[in-house]
Length: 560
Picture 1 (spheres, rainbow, N blue to C red):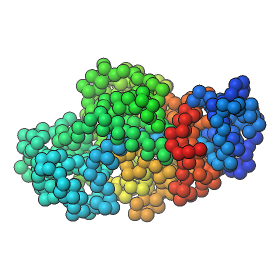
Picture 2: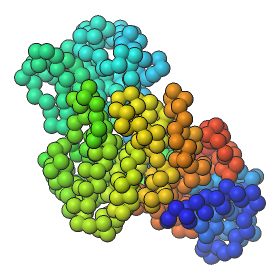
Picture 3: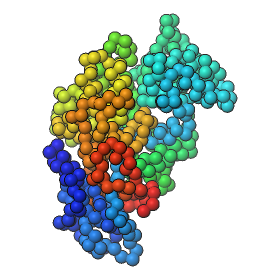
């Protein structure tokens, strides 16, 4: 859909204060429905009938959408009927980038180190000392969630030793790309030596003697120190906890773009036990070419009723791979792969017939990714067909945005970048990057140029799993320090909501099944406490709460 039809559609929804009459049924009512919703305001996200007052569901799919009168024929004595009494219904939201099981793992098993409580070495060590107090010496302590500290850098191992000298300690930055370890942790990992080699794609910062100083750059360096073990039962517990948080916020489908084997097995177990409250699209992560080749040899193309393996995920950068990096940050701005190997990994996934999904933050990293997609596909038309996608891509660079549109590359953004990362980018990059930061997450430019956008919260890397926090950031465009960014990139509520439904569905080839309420599509929907057409501000969006969430016509959250 182009920008003109996109805005025409959302404008119709916002302006519509009177229920539009249904001029046609999407499917003939020839037999009874399992479930009927009537007397409501049903926002369909479908151009043919943007607003309806009733909907019928049979066998987990939408039977028809229309007026109360048109739906009446689908009701018999066995039909469950929900009288909405004017309440608003929409398609279920689709989170196109989050990690439900790791979200639960962090909240239930790790020491939480979130700001504003943790904002300095002193407050960090205070929380770590509390965690160590009641644990036997020698037991691992893992914490996650710290962000920029007052000292302006990550703590070294000796500084962590002051709080936790008798326990191996690993702390992970909120974004998941950086960490720090104490001396005992490095000793246990056999890394307390100048001979310790940097892992592929990662880096250990070092002291003057060349010994790792505890600061860990990128996933491989973190996992080289410690990879917390978790039992299958604990994994299931964490996954269920995380998924329930999403269902309670109106999310009915999640793209897990960093799935490991144990995580995927957990999701399938829960699916078979009838314990999944959301659909899942999985992208197992590969850290190098050898792992990618081995994964593809063994990968089972699983496609269950709720869970599907959709593609393969890799990263081009952790710290943003930029063209313009200040000298004091160049030791951090390293690619996850040499460019030729990066292109080879993408070609390997493409040739296996799978969708490629790449984490790319910096402008240079995004350009590398688009070039690799084009080479692997052999041209723009083939690339558009395959929908290889980019995660993040927050910085404004018009030629790159236009190339993403030409190649048909869906871009999954995290609007919380606006609030919690714009100030950090401004501090860490040179003044030349300021125009890019002023337009960070340039949503309207993406839409104008024809890029397919999706939204994902990216928890636990980001601090909020709530879709309305993402939408609020898009509507307000205000940073954590209350700086107002370029208002030309703001979107209306309905623009953003459409991205979080149909846009996110498109990113995983689900637009024919999910993202709108149309006959034949899966019956994933939400009953809200307010009319979506009346949401005007970011604060209005925060006041919007699900009263009930349905997946396949079954209630997975709330009551109705």
